[in-house]
Length: 389
Image 1: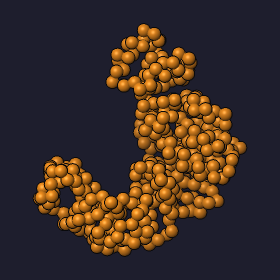
Image 2 (image 1 turned 90 degrees about the vertical axis):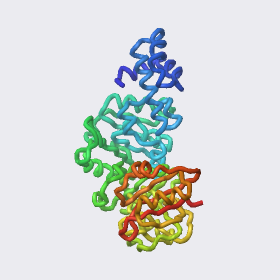
Image 3 (image 1 turned 60 degrees about the vertical axis):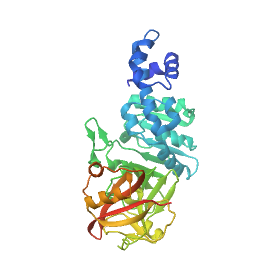
Image 4 (image 1 turned 60 degrees about the horizontal axis):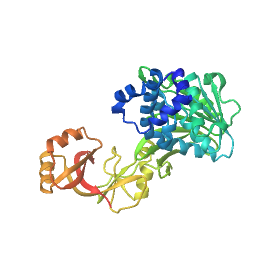
């Protein structure tokens, strides 16, 4: 999308066309474009169809809001999922009414969440189109009154007079993902220094950030949504205290690090627990295992085993029926005997490709099962079971 595209989409004719395209099937683009060009100018039709496709993709992150919002392809890809942005905004809002500088604001996903949390927001980005998009999105959602948009390089102006600071440095370029933190835009060192001045301050980082890269005194929070790890956030505020935290959405369950030693290794019990990815990324498997009165199946594998079934938001439990040395023929025979046609394959610490294993086994039958390909006390092992009820 270009600034000219956004301008014509915001005009009455563009609004009329976008409203008429809601629910449009992209497979019909060619026929619809031909029909619409009889009434509308070709550039407007092209811009509206492109925006409609982006809105349909945006629904996965923004829900019903997406059909009123405006996106660029890059901006949509890099934007924060609404549920994650809402969680973060609630933490900023817990400090009371005030203002937050959203530095490197993108299309405005975080700004929208902060505005809905009752906070005044200064959204800063150096790209003029991005600034126009974030303004258009806030206005479209009725949130524009408390939003100030500044088109500038964040390293030139910083947070201004806002107390809270949120920085989301760009981790991609036209050539792909950037792995050197100092090649982020702005560099991670600048983002951390800016956030450290906030009350509170936060920096969004990739969930794979090494623990040793977390600054002393900062809280590192890993966030998952629906079981998928979405991001990590480094927090700077009086409540951070240098802890590690795993937050699971949509429930909001939070597990805090307590510096526990590694759990003991023990034989596989009746239940196997698969910790949420945020728990694993935050290195909090020991804290989860303590709640479950469990241990590890192997010192290097993040599977927790226990003899009792304990309700927990931090791990998915499975009831284990069979513990077998890895042997493909034996597994195939066992599944055939039990008429297992739906096989879920999970692995941790195994080189076996799950799809290749399914093709070689060719399960058939009315029943279902889950097989874990892993190591138990260092030995390649198959654990067969079902989700625990």
